[in-house]
Length: 292
Image (cartoon, rainbow, N blue to C red; front, side, top):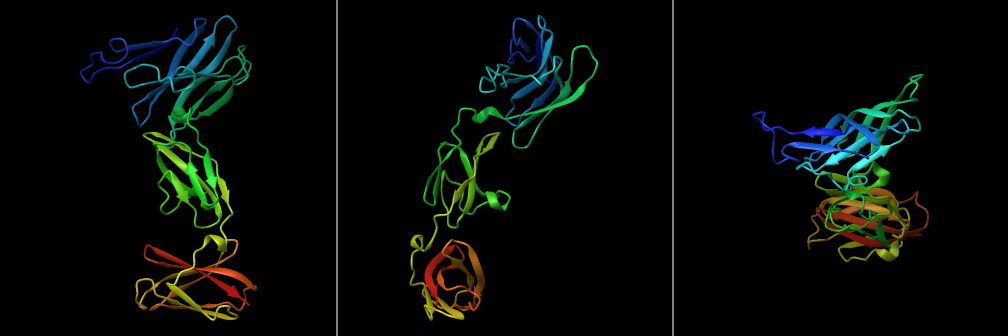
């Protein structure tokens, strides 16, 4: 027996553009009996069939998956030549159902157990969408600049410490981190989606922050209060968010600039160096300040 796949036109006639005049037969090995028991179609139109590949000579059955291109040819980017066998450790494994997750990963469910039928177990396996099987998903890190090695894909950088939330301006192959933390990049290529390992950025300190005449602070050094004048666009009538970070890049205080002025109550802060960040619309400016 072999996997058999047939595609019909809407009028019930065989679709001759698919496989061999509408029919595809797949043999996993010359010594196996193969049967397809479930089918799913990916968002890109590729077809996945799951079932059992049974080695007659040895009496061993495996979870068997095959993935086909839209024209019925095996998708050689999947498994080995388009085919995957999974051994659960028993002699009679077979997949009866299958589903595709939103991220493209494939779940196959069925049974596993010995040939003597003395017992049967529920079997479940999840497979990667091997669109990226040959893709280097690593990240090159240079201080706070992260670059995905894989090129010509769609990118979304995410904050690993914040439930993988997308970060602003993080849709290019290279991302410049503005705050210490842990980051990864999600790769997308059509229906294929995968995520890199998370990398830690802890290099941001006052040496990576440029002083700006758009913000003035007094007194500086400060003690119990820090007063700021914000003048980004040449006026003192701006309203925006003001953030105060320590020299490890950790957010300490926030306040609102009203008519170009803001005040921090800094009585509870330890002496040391801090960074003021002012965000007005899409414009961000920084200033180094010192607590006595």
